[in-house]
Image (cartoon, rainbow, N blue to C red; front, side, top):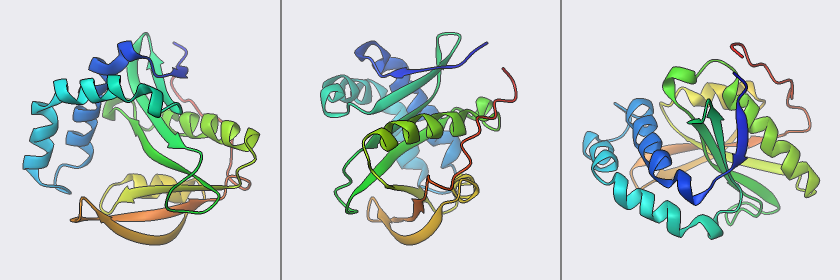
Length: 175
């Protein structure tokens, strides 16, 4: 089973909306309010519609599939509106049952190659405090630079990823 990274398609919207709701409910349980997480599940159809409508405004949104099933995704912009001359990762998620197999690093490495081609030298990502992915970003060489509030309520740690020194070896354990 070889994972495939490809651009997001309109046809992915329903499955992706469902996957987003699932991953948020497993990743952020105990970190954000249960009502917020329940709302994600209850509003999957609206989320899918937003994904369909925003596809042209989000050209750098990539899906990771395994046997035609979405198991992860990454969305970034090349020109962060918060950080000068930096690309910003807005979303990097792997479904819980696929975590720990190198898929997050695979997606990260994929976009780093794209960013390098564009000549951008800085990469920023935010991660909610309490999320175990903070350790993942530190493992990639991420340096904590600041924090702010997500949804005016939840502390989000901001990391600068110096991809010039990041280990770009792809380590897929279960292919």
